[in-house]
Image 1 (cartoon, one colour):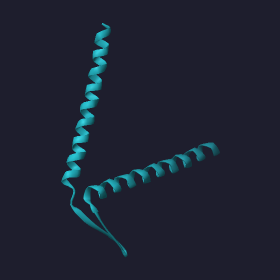
Image 2 (cartoon, rainbow, N blue to C red; image 1 turned 45 degrees about the vertical axis):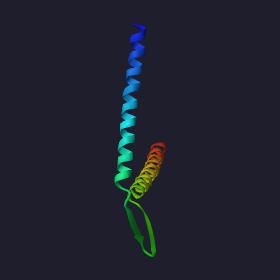
Image 3 (cartoon, one colour; image 1 turned 180 degrees about the vertical axis):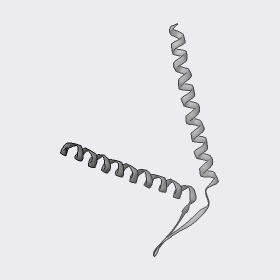
Image 4 (cartoon, rainbow, N blue to C red; image 1 turned 90 degrees about the vertical axis):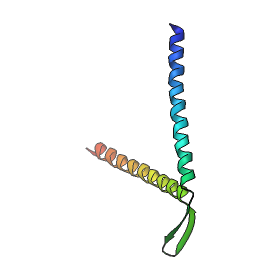
Length: 84
């Protein structure tokens, strides 16, 4: 009975490993397929970078903005609760 539990635990670890390796493979494929250089222009500023790097940076910026907005709204909500 005890070996079944360990086997079940290893089975879960194998599923996690498969998911991680699959996602890593998709990320590598995404990077390989989006190596084209794109030019970004904003006002008088111009820059060139790979499309995959641009998409990663935009995703990171979006996550950071969302994190700050969540913290701001949560702080505002807590402040309203304390005043009531």
